[in-house]
Amino acid sequence: MPDSMRRFFRFLNKFFMVPIFRLGLGGIFTNPISGYIMVLKVIGRKSGKIRYAPVNYAIYQGTVWCVSGGRKTSDWYKNLLATPDVEIMLPGGAIFGHVTEENDPQVRNQVIRKILQNAGFAGFFEGYNPWNISDEEMAAKSADLPLLKITPIGIGNGASDLQGWAWITMLILTVLLVLLLIWIF
Image (cartoon, rainbow, N blue to C red; front, top):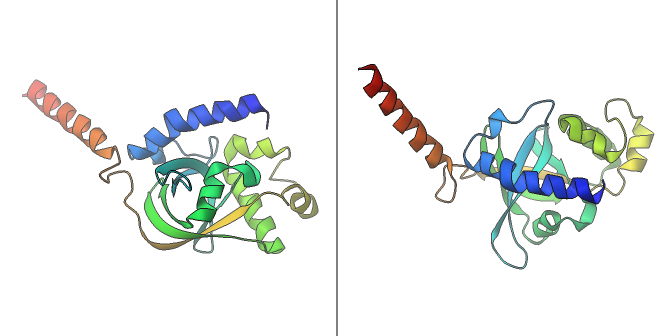
């Protein structure tokens, strides 16, 4: 992916996707065209602060899977290696899980294909069509793509926790409802 495209997605993720998920509105903006997106709440390996990383995902055999499009150089990937317990905000809620890297070639092929298909238009940024590429080509082209398996171990805080922003949405909706009721009566 060109550097300009990478900068565009970094800006979009930081100032649009993360705030949308923190407001609890992630389900509105995930669809087959824009892709199915979740937000990882990872702990910075150097700072110890919470960092947010929106990524495409797939659910397969009861676990959540994602890939690191930036390969092994992505900061969020390095942070997960340092602290493999992570909270993820899915469009329908939050879970807490443990991350492991998957290296089984058969599972990798099947799951990476599903993730790239779920990625919508972004699935084509790897340079091939995830819907019709052969298994052999898929294995060759995704050999350096880290596949991460997130096994659920609990329920996460989600958008409405003390550090989330969903309360703002609820406050605004409540005020609008009160104003509407006053206007009607």
